[in-house]
Structures are given as structure tokens and as C-alpha cells.
Image (cartoon, rainbow, N blue to C red; front, side):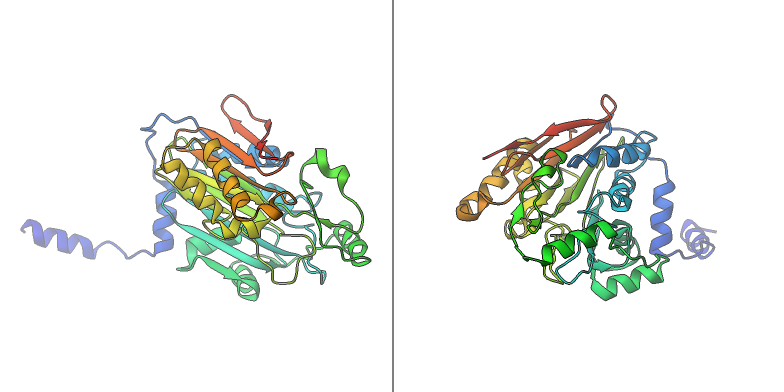
Length: 340
């Protein structure tokens, strides 16, 4: 039998496998550490410390960055003490808790959900959108239907604590954000009747194979209009990964991040040679340049990680913090630099 016939007959013996099965097979294949990279994971705000520790369980055993970031941000999603993410998040003005999340891997694959109700782990639904569908984003009832069809259980995400805060807000319905509510140091500044600022956990990881991954998840702006979606589930705004350059994520008032396609901008600035901190600062200054009259009254921060494992951040206001976890430090909390 000649070579051509042999190959043709051999191919007939190989069963067809689906795209999903190929993805699962790829995850099990050994990846050689040709880059000699030291793994690292970084994430926004104080609650990033606990999230990083869970992500590190994956990275420290040679796991993929995409698996690490999903596992990491699931931690604050399930922590009902955190009222800006997942279960226990502040509701919209009608009393409904809705979640936004997105995830992106080193191959440019991404998945997203927005205005998702009744499901705690929005990030895992976003991951499933990435892995199992030809789409990038599912929203609202469609996102919930997809989640339920794939084994996620419906839950009541409105906790008594968040419901109490919502009812207090209803007395005056003031719509004025208080900056850095997710930072413990600033939490005491929260006043009854005012709008509590929302916030996100954005997480970026570099694994031992030299590959990047990122995730972002939030319950959105407290007491928002029903159906409002911020930057967190929008690829290029709340999160962006380019495996040749680095990754970036955003936190703060999402409308301003969307207007500037903030995370994509940070990555492109790193591509041009800026350090992660320099790129984040320039993105923040872009917001000030476009809307100087509003920039002083809101918080927006960017966090970035490049291909070398270098990281940096910058924010509009004081009080933005981020957490770092690598082979040398597991629980480092850094106060980000700011313009004002």
C-alpha cells in the first residue's frame, strides 16, 4: 500500500470529535515550560488577596492561566459579605440583583454574560459561553436559560443585608457615587441614603507556560436602572488579553471605561513600549482629557500585567488597591498611584 492510501485508510479509523472535546483534550496535553516564566496573579481591591490564593492553587501546580482566573474570581462571587460581586451584591433600583462577567484566554477566545439574574457564578457561565458556543456574549433571560440548561441552579441572590441597604436608599433615591466603597479603608465613608459605588474584581494571570488569562466579574453599579450594563462584561473595556503583549482590566465607573475602550487601550499602549503603570496612567489621563468636569467626582482604575510578568496600576482617585501573588509573595496589597 502506498503512503497516500495508508493515510486515507488510517483517517477513516479515527472517530470524529467535537470542538468541545478538542478543547478538553488540549487542556490535558503537557505544555513545556520553554519560557522559564515565573507564574503570577494580580487582581483588584482588598478582596483580591483571597481570590489570588485560590488562583494560585492552579498556577503553582503548572495549571493554565484561564483556569486560575476562573477559580480565583469565583471566591468573591460566593462571598456574601462582598456587596459588589456575585451573591449578596447590591440590587438595581427595582430590587433585582443582576451580574456581569467576562473571561478571555491566551488564544483570544472569550466569553461574556450581562444582566444575568439568579446565578451566583457568572464567571463560570461566561467561561461556558466561551467553551461551548460560537458566541461571545449572552444577556438577560437568554444567559440565564443557557446557564440552567448547563446545570447551574437558580438562587435568590438578594441577601437581607443588601435588601436592607436598598430599602434605605429608596427613602431618598440619591444617585451620587461614593468612591472606593470596595476598599476597607474607605468603607466607613458610606452614608445611608447615598448610592454605594459598585465594583468589580478584575484578575490577570501569567502561567508557567508563558500564557496569559483574565477574568472580570461584578454585580454592577448599586441601585442602577434595570438593564444597565457597565464595562465589566465588555471585552476591550473591562478586560482585554493579548498574549503577545499583556493584559489589562478596569474598575470603577464603567461608562467612562466603555467610552475609552480602556483595557484595550492599556494593552495597545504596552505594545508601543509603555510599562504597565505608564500605560494605565495614560488611559486614566485620557478620561480626564475627555471629561475633566466629571473626572474629579468618580473613580476609575486600571490594572495591567505584561508578558514579562511586570505589573502596574493607576487610578483617578486615592484609595485604589490591588493584590499580588507569585512565588515570592502570596498576600501583597498595594495602594495604586493616582492622579488626584
